[in-house]
Amino acid sequence: MTTRKGQAILLNHAIMVGFSIFMVYVVFTTLAAIKTDYQEHVGGNEVKELCFVMRGAIDKVYSPADYNVSTNVSLGQMEVRLPERITDIKYSSRFFNKSILIESTAFNDTCKIGYSANYNGSTSGGLTRFSYSKYSNGTDVIEMTKI
Image (tube, rainbow, N blue to C red; front, side, top):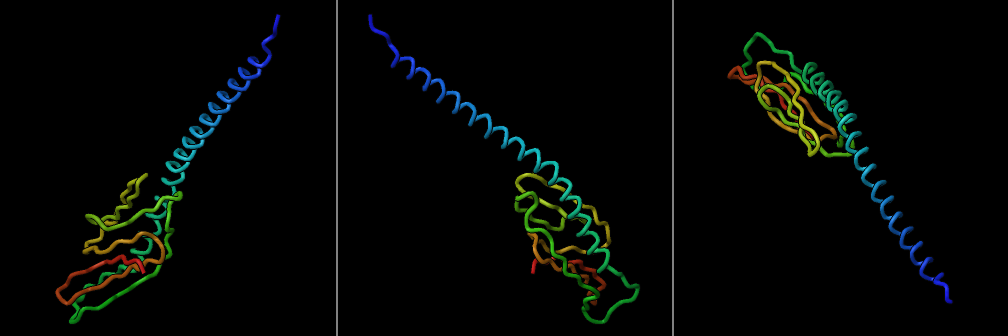
């Protein structure tokens, strides 16, 4: 009578290969879920901090005067280094209805400003200039420009 030892070895290898593939799948899906949770939690905190920095820069440059100017004049500007990525995701910021809209593929958030001025500009992080100008027609303009 012959024994079939070769068949048992092949079966053991097939089971081990199948189990290894399953384990690799479990590890990758778990790491992807952890990364998503990290980006949501930490990214939300970083967006709030970014809002705080941007509002602080606007608060420092905005100083409305009660007098009318005869020429267009810049009344203040400030340069701020903003992060270029939030949780390793690129983002963009722009003014929208007296607020700052921060957008990316993973999150969208709005920071209220509320000053009675016109708002122009956008940035995607990096060195950003916030400036306040008053025009001869009485218009106040706050600008955000990536340098």
